[in-house]
Length: 401
Ligand code: ADP
Ligand code: ASP
Ligand code: MG
Image (cartoon, rainbow, N blue to C red; front, side, top):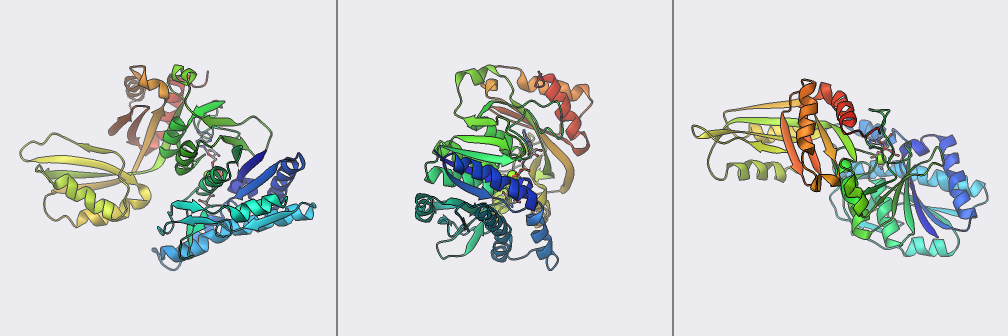
């Protein structure tokens, strides 16, 4: 069997833990499998490097940020290879570039365009354990890039896809995908399986246990994906194609995203082209707009609200403040959060959204914005009620049962 394992920051957070990972990998190899291991930087390392850079300027050049941030993963890859070699295993560490990962040139948020697997394949053929530094690649011109926060998950899935690995196992400090973040609700239950689409919603809505782009790619390449813990041998969660039994489950999870901010525009001229102008200007600055609400206009003007990631609020404010015409007033609020309920069963069952609204109403929590899709309902509420709302919703949909 050929397997790809990915070990996240906590799993390689110190030398003892790297040793633990080396032992786990050694066991898989000794059992006669081929294995490629993708590693993250040691926990806290990427943030530390970002702090170093922002000591000098709040807006460091993205190309140099990639040079800087990619180093964290290379340290871990080399240390894990050395640890394995010290146990008598033949291991080789590769940077993203050496592993043949080619990306576009959107620095700090690059997309993988192709992978030339020859170097990895040759090493596997020679019986080596291949260790790849996650979260990074290079442009066609040979510049180092990184894949966005949490991007080592994406490296692992992409490598599993190109090598046609039998499975891809993502190891962290939780032993699978739970009905909600177990740090918020200790009664959260582990799921045996979850569909790619539900997992994609959960990750996109804020569950950082898997990076959303990695789930999207796993679905596209049909990679058999597991979430497991590096601290025990529990069964993990399998992320896979949707099947009929999944639709019987109404709601599979609830998610909290605290990284949200809201922009409200008051007295916006109610005429064609305004929304296009506002959102084009935001898009040109690479600001990701999520929920949007607009009221019916009265007296020739209307109110428009939308959410952006908290990290982009200052940028959004800068863009909006350039509108000296067509908008009478604006507020910016980063004390909000988004709570979401996700489940493929919603496609075929009515009343899921109404129940969520009733649950929040019962706790006197005001809903500021709502958005829905076929398999999710999201609500913007005051940040201070985020955890409470998650626990109430978790109970209301009986996710602890
Ligand atoms: P790594 O550093 O290994 O990539 P992450 O910290 O990115 O790991 O992801 C693991 C964390 O994800 C867990 O510690 C857990 O608190 C959080 N998490 C959020 N939502 C969920 C969920 N639904 N199921 C399991 N873990 C979750
Ligand atoms: N080290 C990177 C981060 O912290 C990538 C990863 O861990 O997946 O975002
Ligand atoms: Mg992660």
